[in-house]
Image 1: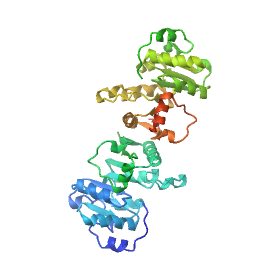
Image 2: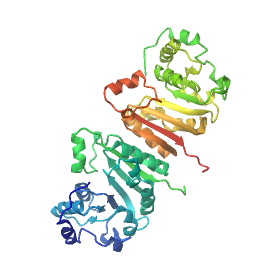
Image 3: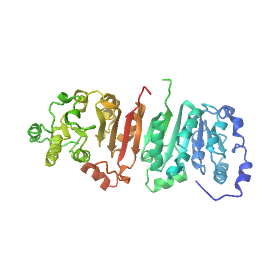
Image 4: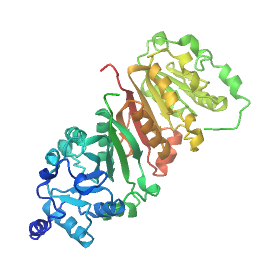
Length: 215
Length: 215
């Protein structure tokens, strides 16, 4: 998402190092162990953070790290997080291309891609977070049985992503072409997602696991 | 589809051996070569045949074989075919489990599954035409670069099938969660499909190719 630049964003982000991790490279390999948390979840393009806050609350034994490039958007997320801070919730204000500086090989349990920018123009497809170049990076950081969970309202992005995953040797563990037709108490609904649900538009979701080449 | 048994079905089917192939096992390996046709397309569960008739007309250089288990339904299809018979269109009144008696290993270019019975009860999932046991059979009969094309209005069947394909090492060559939002002059629309389009219901479509293990 894009918002107008906020002058209060950086000062707020700097003032809360307990949530905003300014040197994530210092936590490589220790995201969970530092706090005796169980599974490491990383969201890329976290937006305003309400999905993440609810997930961290639902699963307090897990570590929830959300990555947001835009400092103004990240500051909105932080403001919400400060309303109900939780010790298992972290924010990185940075670019997904640097993921491999912040996480160890096979450290992440689940990567979440929620309502990512669809980059509709063909010339921009390489910026999509499910483009092959990103998948190669995710693969290194995910545990052997790690997964990528993706949700979107965008048909083109969903179809593109399913093909890219499949053609790059990932296995489809779950797919839904109307995720909200069933109840999913294990999954949070962001304000952004709720808008599409209110409009009766389907939410597309898929879960992929890297094929284990050695098998 | 299910229809009431028609007393005229078997006599009509028997009267047209030029379209209804009564001994398909005698054509093994020769479906295309007999008539100098190019690609072999096989539809399983052909229903009333209007999709098949239009496809055979669109692609006269290919061989179009449709398989329908129910003799009354097959007779409906035949009646339509007789209105505009074409030399590249054939009908087998038989059960998909016998496919390997009628076609040679690696003989088929494309298998078509159009609006197959969704068998909604879990205990009946093994009857779905995309169940793993069927896929193993299709795989033997398809050429190395052969494909399965599937269309359906049924979300559950679509989701089930995508997972089964992926988990059994097929590659997704194409997927659409609303196939008719774009124009597809290369594909026919049956009366059955048109009903869902008129109701503004999405048509789901996917195309899968067997992963070449030797690569």
